[in-house]
Length: 211
Image 1 (cartoon, rainbow, N blue to C red):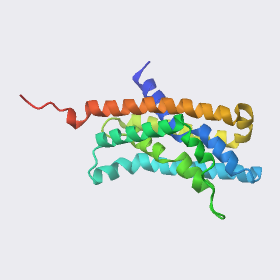
Image 2: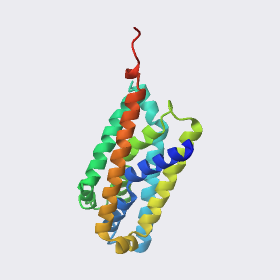
Image 3: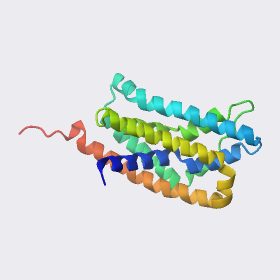
Image 4: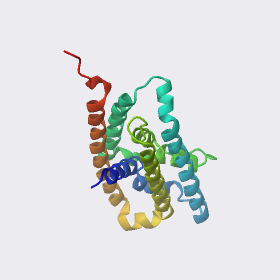
């Protein structure tokens, strides 16, 4: 497999698991149960648009902000890998299921903004993943653009899944969705470990002192 296909596969797996479209299907179905079909579709569209703006901004200026305050990208990768690992552990042990029940928006609050766009689609894990996957010091401009395209594809798939959330849950059931979330959690844990190991191997602390 070519290096480009490997990167695309890793980017897709990382973004898919951190954005968690399947988990968001269950959340969206519960939050919008009382809305009309038209309102549900409009809420899904706006939620994904808001999340897209947030994640693209994170990938575009996130590293610039970190550089401005003196945080080395390798340090961010180690911290990000640990955060993503913990995020994956939560998915594995079912702690993420609480997000389908734990958000009860106040009356008058826009569901598309909270909790759909933030923190469900564009959560801390997704934002951290986007920043790590678009490292200016590691990836060329075409590679970062490829990551951006993969991000948009995942978000578009998320939007489609939200549109058909009721039908999807009828087919796979909430238990099936829960199983898929746990499988994605295991994949995310593996990817997070690889991010940390890679950062430790190429970071500035690996420089060997002269004899």
